[in-house]
Length: 290
Image (cartoon, rainbow, N blue to C red; front, side, top):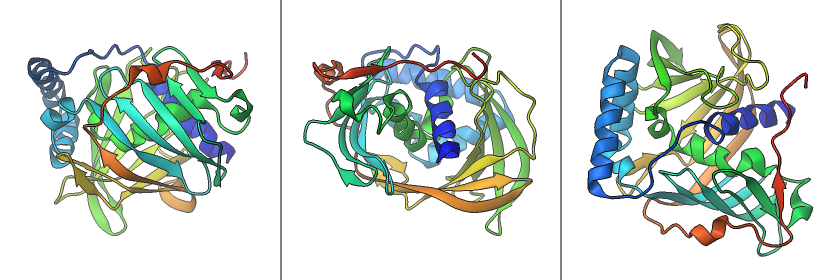
């Protein structure tokens, strides 16, 4: 569980705490501008073109940029389960908490990331769920490959590799200095050679360690994306399996997650970003060694 929490926290720090400033609004001209800019960035390198093909296989940049929100139930099997609504431009997210540690919680339990702070209500739940990483973790895992078109990313085409006896196209995504608190992270995508959809990705946690040199034998998590569905023109997974991965080999599965009731057209209620009385803001923990 400690490995899972560390890895998930790095995902939040990378995206939720990034220096990116997404545009607000959701009109056609703005969507077209975002698509044009993203296509130019991605088309500049072989690795970027691989990511762009994956995005097109999942529905395309136009469909993504025209989807104001992402909404679904997302949760870890036996762990936290929430109904979330995320704004795809501002990356603000609010949740109704449905279960913690696999057990139902009281009505009205909620948490949110308002763009500056992460909070949970009631504050008695703070010891059971850390909103500092849980508010955006499910959203970003669910939103790959689309969020990998953001600015400040670098793409490196790698040699093909086998995944369950199928040779997949491989691309590594890394981040510019200062893009989040875990900018030393990298994501390695397994792209199916025929469908160009994401079959899995590998990720590692570097929070608090700066930017260590990439070590191909370091321990990572291999996350499978399974049971895709298409909703509102976008194709998204509904099941995930996290395995250990080191020295080029898949290890044991140590977590699984599921999503359901997907929508990319739900309204976004900004009042849900305001913490109720009796809630608590989760502060950013210090980096390792502080």
